[in-house]
Amino acid sequence: MRDDTEDPNYLMANERMNLMNMAKLSIKGLIESALNLGRTLDSDYAPLQQFFVVMEHCLKHGLKAKKTFLGQNKSFWGPLELVEKLVPEAAEITASVKDLPGLKTPVGRGRAWLRLALMQKKLSEYMKALINKKELLSEFYEPNALMMEEEGAIIAGLLVGLNVIDANFCMKGEDLDSQVGVIDFSMYLKDGNSSKGSEGDGQITAILDQKNYVEELNRHLNATVNNLQAKVDALEKSNTKLTEELAVANNRIITLQEEMERVKEESSYILESNRKGPKQDRTSEGQALSEARKHLKEETQLRLDVEKELEIQISMRQEMELAMKMLEKDVCEKQDALVSLRQQLDDLRALKHELAFKLQSSDLGVKQKSELNSRLEEKTNQMAATIKQLEQRLRQAERGRQSAELDNRLFKQDFGDKINSLQLEVEELTRQRNQLELELKQERERRLQSNRSIPGRGSQKSEPKTDGKHKIQEENVKLKKPLEESHRLQSHPVDEQDQPLLSEQPQMCQLCQEDGSLPKNVCKNCRGIFCDACSTNELPLPSSIKPERVCNPCHEHLMKQYSTSPS
Image (cartoon, rainbow, N blue to C red; front, side, top):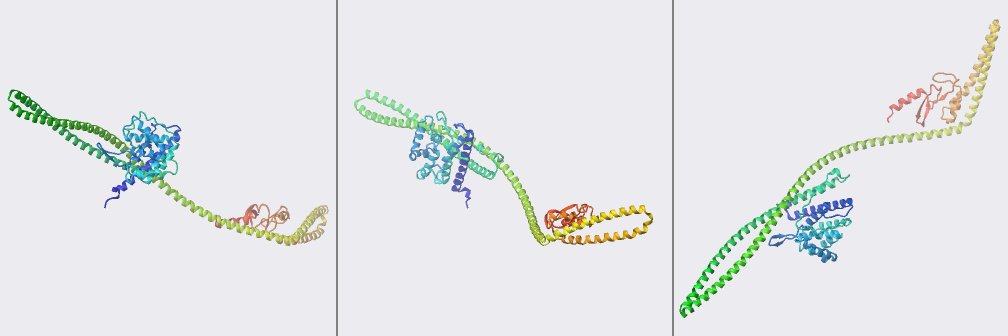
């Protein structure tokens, strides 16, 4: 089974795709460079020259060859001449091209036509009109040529972007006939680092397309060189044959000349003999002379024919020599172009290896980033779960706070008046106690003074002192009852405004057993009464978001509980 790569239709489709990619690259590069340049372009501008070379290759693709004396000739001037019949505005360009004195070949006229159409900014319009008439193009192109397929329509659409370019060409004095149409791929082979951002895949695809096109063009150039070499060999054989025929003709001419001289001598001899001989002999000799003259006329005509044929052979030989020189020149140019294309192919392969290495490194970086991204996603999920747990705990704490506030409001509503009355009683009892303590102190001082003044009355002193002590103990019992009742009521949650009132009560610290001379604080966790030294810490409690004052034992207990609880 034959390989698909040897199928002519597959090869033509591959060539069409490569030419379309090259046209895209050249048009895009020309527009970008022209806009950056910001001035009118001339014929020496390199991207513009490369654009015309690419367009020439596109128009030559799939051309039917016309057989001439010098061989097969492919020219895209014939299809371009049809444009004036389709678009009347193109008649001026066609007439101008035909009037140019320096153009001698159809290829030169076609190149001049492309330049004038670009100057008119009508190249896209002319190409669209030409491509739409495929019945006319079928006379010049093969069925699977670029101009007959959809790639031609795509290129014609891309040419619309060239209307933003201003170009000015001087056709007089420019040698368009002998220019070599070789694409310089170095203008389109750029390093990936010079481009920006996310064009890496597109550039690799474009470079691979360029590589395929270069290989295809190299194969066609090799085939063209082989064909030209075969033509040169055939011309050499024909030249040798013509040289042999020319030598034979020269020998024949020399033979005819010798026969003519001999006939002349014979005729002169016959005339002399006729003059001297009798009349009858003259008659017979006259007949012989007429026959000799007839033969001489035939030989003369034959000589003229041979000379004419010789002139034709000489002119053909000159034409063959001219064709040989042109073919030799074309072969040299093709060889130079082939060398440059091979150099460009080597550069392209080196760039391909570099891009492959960069692609491998970028794949490794993408893999590392994906792993890092997965770890970050895992941490994010863990943080989201932790945040969810904290939100649940926050909602629970909020519900506890709301329930505590509700209980506090209910407690205030139920026992507010009683607490106020008990606080008033406590204050009154506190004042009475202070007054009794002050009186007791004064009594003690007075008795001390009296004992010092009267030493003999010591026995009488003990009895009143005992009575005063019993009196003070009774007063303390009376004071403890309302304090215990107040402490029982304060075991429920109270408002922050009630704390100063409780802290002002001179009660004893439950931890260090300090007396009531200093203000006390209520622990928000166990509701116990402690001095400032025993309740210096603050912690957030389940019933309150804000930090609250707690005693030292509760602080240690809560810290251990928080440290063992899950985060």
